[in-house]
Amino acid sequence: MVITGRFISKNIPLVILLVAGLFLRLYKIGQTFQFDYDQEVPARAALEFFVNHKITLVGQELSFEGFFLGPLHNWIQFIPYGFCGLLPDCVPYFYILIGILTIIVLYLAVKKIFDNKTAIIASAIYAISFSAISFEIGVNSNYFLFLSSIGLLFCIYKYFSGSNKFLILGAFIAGIAVVNFNPVFIFSSLAFFLFATIRTNRNILTFAVAGLAFLTNYLPLVIFNFRHGNILWDNFLNFINQNVVAEDYLVRSVFLFKDVLIPFFSYYFFQSGTLFFSLVTLILLVLGIILLIKSKNLLYLFLPVWIIITFFGFTFYKSWIPDYYFQQTLVPLSIIIAFAIRKNFIIFLIFILSFLFINIQANVNYSTVINYKVKKDAINYVINDSKEETFNVYYDMPSQFNTGYSYLFKAYGKNPQEGGKNLYVFEFNESPDYLKLKYQMTFPGKIVYVGFDKFVKITSIKNVN
Image 1 (cartoon, rainbow, N blue to C red):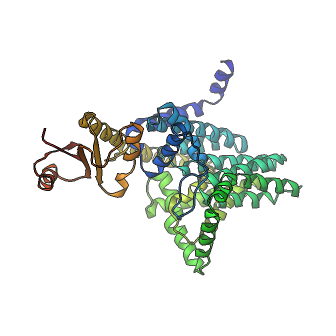
Image 2: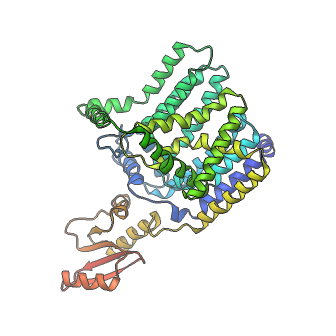
């Protein structure tokens, strides 16, 4: 108790940030938590684990067909699904807990490596940025890239302080992220290893062990590949073949920088990727890098090197590059921006006031027409309306709104049945009068009722008793 009180008294800014971060995350949790395809995959893995006592060695399939993540992201979510009886209700709170722990870890790591002021600013950015909150409540594997990045930063710091074992630990963390969270973290891993080579008193054996620590994370995928006739290896070769076509890399790099990287960074701070905010972000980024160079601390250069290597890595990446692939660079970005504003009070004040106003407003004004709460209520609507009779469900909505329902029916133990006595049709944003007329003409002699929600319409079609 004394230790806790002493810690709080020495870290009052951190306590304030934790309270603010917790409030912003809880404020609209009922609306921000989605339950779409990315969230349904670990839910199904949890159901298989708790009900059928099966554990999968692979995670979610990636956008490149036949590529799979490792299983760790799914396994992590066994905790909240176990607590809430396989329903997703605990998941957003579990991720909020991780988010609060991330604020603490970020603050303590940056304070140790840099200074208290930089730690406060960098942690405040993560705690309050609505983009960071959205990544967290989005509940997908990319979210863990931020925490993995903190691990890499701390390990490179300890390695440059003379502790060789942290090169091995950093390599293991990098492997966890690449295999289980997003393969594009390979560029951050490359930055970590390349920067580590410039330290004096390098040890080849340490690098060899670090390489093995990185590769150890592939073991579940290797076992899965062996059991399934080299399916993962064959798909990897197909991916390589699709990425050997020559391209104008200069044009591609300009596009990535101008239309993807800087707007993504700008949106993280200001909820806007417009030219004005992109220029502000770029100026602060350049100013921060200049100040890092002037500090004459070799370790500090890891931050811009990290972003540069990741950026040029994507220049040679032939597949589509969504902006969220750069989530892996948000830790160095936040620290660089903190460096840019920490010594000039006017710049600091303008940035902080703008940042706070824009991101708090984004949080307060956030709204969505469909989320987990809507889907859960829709499931309960059907279950209650069917009154223990068999039923079937059809979904006639845009694909992004169709996901999640089938799992929730399973979790409630009320699976739709083909040829069930009652039929329910889910549609989106149609007029109730139009739907009623439509299904009365399609099913003459049956009772048709349209209800549930302003946007999600559920048409029930029943036999006349």
